[in-house]
Each structure stands twice: as C-alpha cells, then as structure tokens.
Amino acid sequence: MTNYLEVKNLSKSFGKFQLHDITFTLPKGYIMGLVGPNGSGKTTTIKLILNMLKRDSGEIKIIGLDNISDEQKAKAELGVVFDTNYFSDDWQVTQIEKSISVFYPNWNSKRFAEILKKFHIPPMKKVKELSKGMQMKLMLACAFSYDAKLLILDEPTSGLDPVSRDELLQILSEYIEDGEHSVLFSTHISSDLERVADYITYISYGNLFFTGSKDEFLDNFRIVKGGTDELSPALNKKAVGIRIFPTGFEALIKKEDVNAFSPLTIEPAAIDEIIVFSSKEGEDHE
Image 1 (cartoon, rainbow, N blue to C red):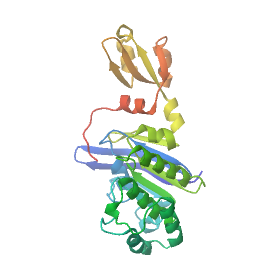
Image 2: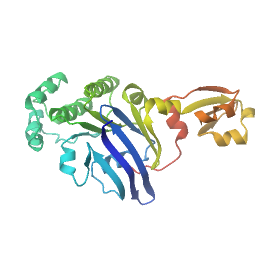
Image 3: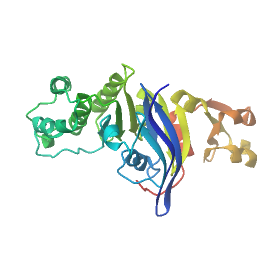
Image 4: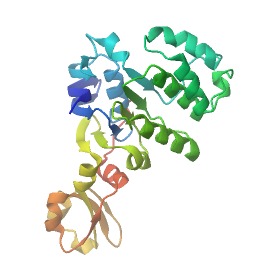
C-alpha cells in the first residue's frame, strides 16, 4: 500500500509543552481525521508537516518526498486549507487565479472555472463578500485546479452552518473516490469523523493515544455502566476515563478488560465518548 503521508517519531518542544514521538501514516486514497483536545498538538503537527515550524526530531514524507530537503516538490502535491481565509479580502476570485497559478505547473484554468461553477462561486466577487463556507470552497477549488494529491485541512468545518458543513464533507468524499487522492483534516466535531474518516489519529496533550482505522478505534473501547456500589478500586484503576454520579458511574474501558467488568452493563463506545473520557485537563498550546 502506497502512503501519501508518513510521519515518524516527530517531536517538538514549546516551553512546558512537548509534542512527543508522533508516528502515523496516511495511505493513498483515504481520509484521516486528526483529533484531540484543544492544546493537544493537532495544529502543531500540521505546521510541522508543512514545514511552517522547525521540528526537533523525526521524519516527514509527503508522497514519498522529504518535507524539508524536497520541500518545493512536496508542496506542489499539497493542497492546504486553514480554518480562516488566507487570500486578500479585496481580491476578486479571478485575481486569485492569476496570483497563484504561476506557482503550480499543473494549474488547469478550465478546471478552475468548472469547479467555481460547481461550487456556485461567483468569479467577480471579492473574497470578503463570500461566506466562510464559500471561502473554504474557494480554497479547495484552488487545490483541485492543480490536482493536489494530498489535502491538509485544519478545522475546516469549524464555524460552518450545518448545510455548508455537509457540502464540504461531501466534497472531500468525492475527492478521494478515484483512489488517487488523500485527505488529512483536524477536527473536534465527532460527526465529521463518523461520516467521512477512514483512519483516525488521536493526539492527547502531545502524546499519541491512537492511530489506525476508524473501525479499529471504535472496536478497541467499550462503555461500562453500573451503580456506585459496583465500582471497586481495582475496576476504577482499569478505566481509561470515568464519570461518577450520585446513583452510579459510566466509564470508558479497553476491549480486553471487558471480562473484568462483567456482569455490568457494557455498550459500544461512540467516537465522542472515547475522546471525552480519554481526555485530561491541559493547557492550550496550539
């Protein structure tokens, strides 16, 4: 299987915060969600991949190219969308094409016009006149127009209304349908992951908590429920995360520990439950 993104033993320190030994791979033709609490290191990881920050150690390869020694070639294969618009507010859409197409030998003006029409983006509108959802689509239209093989998006659905979020996720799903493109996107919205992610990489305050398929992520954990009198110190210790109420408790446990909690009520864990229960207090370092 060909990997479009390979991150190996990636580390970066900021004062008290440390991104420590992060390793994951994104295969060709798939979507990976990058998740974790605020301050966990998601945005830092993306900036390190894009060489916007200097890493302390580790390796990063984009389409088989080192992101530092082969930076120019690697970035020619990348499309990047941040949670805020990075074009000049006063530019018209047509001016954007003139400004950035010169940097991409594979730029296809016909393709750009087709995508603008498909996304209902008026070519003569100024960027500041577009909604946030339309600005996101515009950034994607640019990436699609030079056939970026790998899309990297930082919180792309944050602040979007439900209709715009649905449209954006549909666009990402269609983008990988040919098996020749991949997507890495950070998000704190679990429904995004449930809908489009094939793989999940979960970073918890600088440490890698999980990386693998979404199905494996869900299969690794269970939710257990019981009365307060049924929670022993030994069981409490086995819980990944726990909530205790006046009348009982809920806990996230690993699949291999299910027998220890029998005959208590055990249910499948949802993505948001895994993230919430496994998260700990931390400061925002992103």
